Image (cartoon, rainbow, N blue to C red; front, top):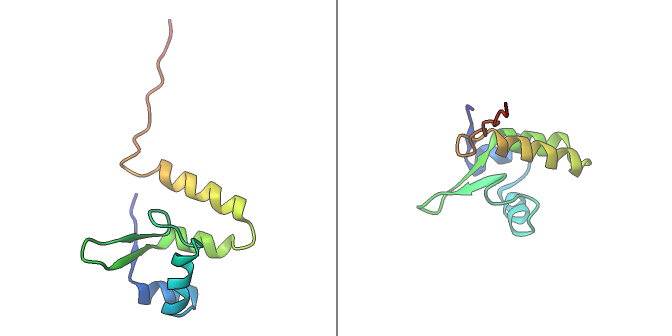
Length: 88
C-alpha cells in the first residue's frame, strides 16, 4: 500500500478548511488519531490522504466511511492476511 501523508497545511488545502477547523476536528473526534491522522514524535501531525479524501466524499454517509476505514486498516502491512487452513 502506497500511502500519502499530508502536513496540516496540505490537509487544510485538500479539505478547504483552516488549521483551526482541523484542530477542532481533532478535538471533537471528527478526525481520529490513528485513523485520519498521526502524531509524530516531535509533536507534528500528518494526515493520511486517502482516509481524508474518503471522509470528504462520505461526509453524509458515516457507515460508508466506516467501511472504508475498516478496509484501509485491513490492508496495512501491520495487518497481514491470514492464511486459511485447509482440511482434508
